[in-house]
Amino acid sequence: MSGGLVAKGMEVSFGGVRALRGVDIVVSPGAVMGLIGRNGSGKSTLFNCITGFVRPSGGRVSVDGKDITGMRPHQVVAKGVGRTFQTPRLEARTSVLTAVTCGLYASVRSSLVGALFGSPWAMREERLLRERAEAEMERLGLANLRHVEVGKLSLGLLRLVEVARCLVSGARFVMLDEPAAGLTSVEKDKLAAEVRAVAARGLGVLLVEHNIDMVRQLCRSVAVLETGNVLCQGTPDEVLRNDDVIRSYLGALGDIEDAAGGWQ
Amino acid sequence: MSFVARRGNTLVLAICVLIALPVVTRNAVWTDSAALLGIYALLALSVGLSYGQAGILTLSQAAFASLGAYAAAICTVRWGWPPLADLPVALLLPALIAFPVARLVARLSPLATALSTLAIGSIIAIAIRSADDFTGGYMGIAGVPSIGFVKAPASYAWLIWAMVVIVVFLYENLCHSAYGRALNVLRFDQARAAADGVNPPMLVSAAFAISSSIAGVSGWLYAHYISFVSPESLDAHLSISALLMAVVGGAEFILGPILGTLLLDGLTRLLPAAELQGVYYGIALIVILLVARRGIFGLIEGGLAQVRQLRRSRSGEVTALEIEASRP
Image (cartoon, rainbow over all chains, first blue to last red; front, side):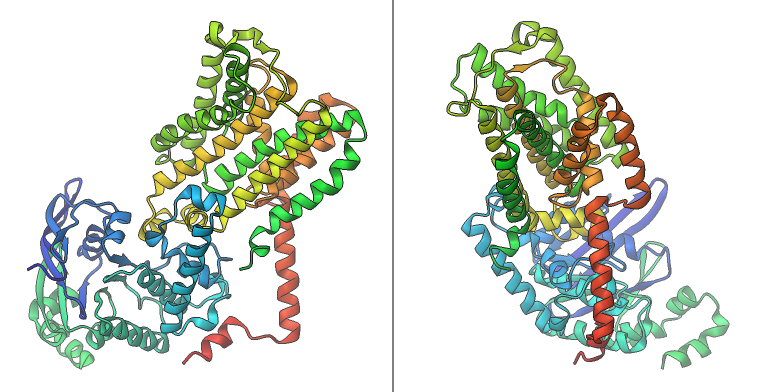
C-alpha cells in the first residue's frame, strides 16, 4: 500500500458533528478516481483533509509511502499534491499567464532578499518560471489566452486555468473540486478531454464531482460517500447500479427505474 | 519582459527627481520641504508595501520610523559610532520587532490586525518615552551628526530622494517576483495562495518586516537631517498621515504613496494656513473614498482601461470569447 495517494481511516469532527468516520481512499498514478455523494456527505471535508485545509482527528494520508498527515496546505503542495478551486477569487485584471505562473511558487528557489535586489539568479529563475508556465499552457491549449485578463474568461476556461496552475507546480496528484459545476456541455467535454490527458501523463487525479456523466466518462473507479462513510466503491457502472447508492443519491426507491434509465 | 519594462516605475520616478530637484534646491525653503517630503514619501511607501501588497492596514509605521531615528541617535551620539554604521541597525531593529508581531497577528481579521499595529506603535512610543537614561525620555536626543559628506540641506534632499528611488527599485523588483505575485493572490484569497504553496502568515510577516525596515530608513534619514529626535518627532499622527497619503495616491500601486505624499503634504506646505492641514486631509480622504476607492492611480488605471476597451471594440480586435471559440 505504498504507491499513490493513500488516505486511510480518515476521521474529522466539527464540534459534535462527525463529518468523516473512517474513510479510506486510494488515488493511483495514471488513474482518475471519482468521489461522489450528496451535499453534506463529507466529500469536501475529505478533499480538504487530504490537501491540509482541514486537520483530521484520525487517520493517515501518505504520498508514495511518505506520511503527509496533518501537514499545512503549502507543505502538502510541496509533496506533490495539487488542488483546484471551484470559483477561485482572483484579481480580475491578472493575466492568464500570471495566474498560471503563480502555481509555480512552490518551486521558487531564490530567496526573498534575492528577489528584492533583482539578483541575476532571481531574474534567470523568473524567466524560467515564465517558460514553464507557457509550456503548460501550450499543452492545455491555453497559449493564445496568455495576455487575457482572468476576469474576462468563461467559467470553463477559468477551471482549465486552475488545472494548469495546479499542474505547473509539478503535482503528481491532482485534486479537482467539482470542475464541471456550472459548465456548458461543450465546456464539460473539453474539460473531460484535458483531465483524461492529464491522467495519461501518469498523474493521479481525484475528481470530486456531482456530474454523473463526467464521472462515468473519466473514472476507472468511484467511491460514494454517505454521512462520512464510504457507502461503496467500484467501477462507475457497478456503483451506479448499487441499490444503496441509488437510495442515497436519489432518495426514493420508486425512481430507480427512471434514474437507471437516465444513466444508461 | 525586458529590463526597462520591469522597472518602469523606478525610471519614471528617477526622471522626475532628476528634473525637479535641481529646480527645487535653488530655494532654501523648498529644499527643506523636498527633504521632508522624501522622508514622508518613504514612510508612505512602507504603508504601500504593508497595506497595498500584504494587506496589513498598518498604524505603526511612524513608530518603526522612530525606532530607526533613535537607533541613529543612540548609536552616533551615545556610543560614538560613525554615521552610516548605524544604518544596518536602523534597518534591522524595526524588522526584528515587526516580524514576530506580524507572525502573531497576521491570522486575525484585517480590523483586528490594524488595531494590533496601533497597539504595537503605542507600546514602542511608551517604551521610548520611559527609557529616560537611554533615549533621553521626553527631552529626546540632540546633536545627531550629519552623514559624512552630506551636510548642506540640498545634499540631504538629494540623498533622501536617491533613497526613495532605491526603495522603489527594490519594491518594484519584489512586485515582479514570485513573492510579489503570491502577495497579490493572498490579498484576494488566502486559501488559493496556500494551494500555490504559499505559507500565508510567513509571507505576510516577511513583507511587513520589509515595510518596517523602509520606515526605519525614513527615521534614520530624519534623525540625521534634523539632528534631533524626541518622542514628538515621529508620533502616531504621522502613522495616520502616512496611511492617508498611501490611500489617496493608491496603496496598491508602487508610485501611489509617493503621489499621495506630494499631493497631501506638498500642497499643505503651499497653502497659507498650516492649521488647516487636518481639514484638508479629511476632505481628501472623503473625496477619495467617494470617487476613487483605489486612489488616484486606480482612477487613472480605470480610465486607461476604458479607453483601451473602446479602441479595441472600434478596431474589432479579437475578444477573449472569440479566442476561446478558436481553441482546438
